[in-house]
Image (cartoon, rainbow, N blue to C red; front, side, top):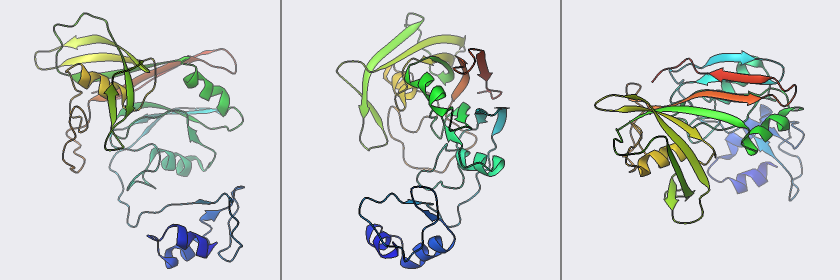
Length: 269
């Protein structure tokens, strides 16, 4: 196993892999720690914990809105990633919840961008997870967002945006192209001020960066968006300039008991 992983990931040195094995950070398909001398088998499923040396603590805090045996509902702050990516591994919302509740079975039921704040739904019970995941897959959940963006005085309200979204270039961007629409957003005006309006956004579909791309394509990019309509130069996160996009609320009929569930963010843009 040690030789195989060193060959597969040459950027990680042998001493680091040995340390991971020694600390039980390399697991088999059943979640059991592997020994570095175990025989490697082609097609074997191996899980390991990626680690970032001296990962800094993010100076933002999540708020727990609701907990039961099936669900955890969280108010996610701006700048906190949901799952591990790039330079963020331990400082993610999922990792914080696992540390808080001591349960490695917790899993996010949907996505929010690192720069977006608001209501996030997590499954706390693998036995019922698929029932809640189906709400998102069948569009049976109401998701409402708020955004601050430039005025659109010539638009007819409420506005609908339907378009085709595909992976852009670089890979982490989403691009709007000609073709059969696969993304649908409803947009309304909540508040008008001279320099910017507050919009209510309802994504019917859930494409990556859908709301950000649709608003930019309409000529009203969301305030402080570093990606759309143009990719800005990389800069450290500025807590004084968060992306002005908030997942305001989630509502759905609970698939377990048919009760109406609704959760709203306590955050404000």
